[in-house]
Length: 168
Image (cartoon, rainbow, N blue to C red):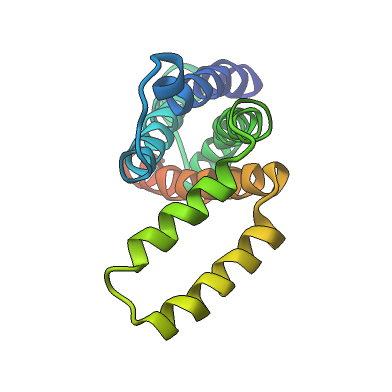
């Protein structure tokens, strides 16, 4: 099991890091609307290695047998690698490449709300968002949030993979 986790975990880590950073690596000026879509797509694509790792373990290591619990455990171990790759890139991006990301996102959010909220509601919401960014806008916390997001998605992928691939 250890070799499977390391092999497919490293694939997931590298793909998570590279795919999450792809727009930056290619020099695209991706807006926040598409950045979120690209980010979730990168997470899901890197988590495909969970399915392939579980399948490999079942077919090549465990003589075609696999319980749901074993599949989820194996999948979550591989997920940790993917989550680490995404979180590391997010930390590097928000601390080194674009340290003003939190302020830019705050400004984007406020501009987006101007069309839908009254002046009084906008003022209240702006103060709320500014406080949230002050409290939670550090690169470490944002990287932790990306790590947590991938862990949650990885659990779902592990569960689905286990349900599809389980054999007794």
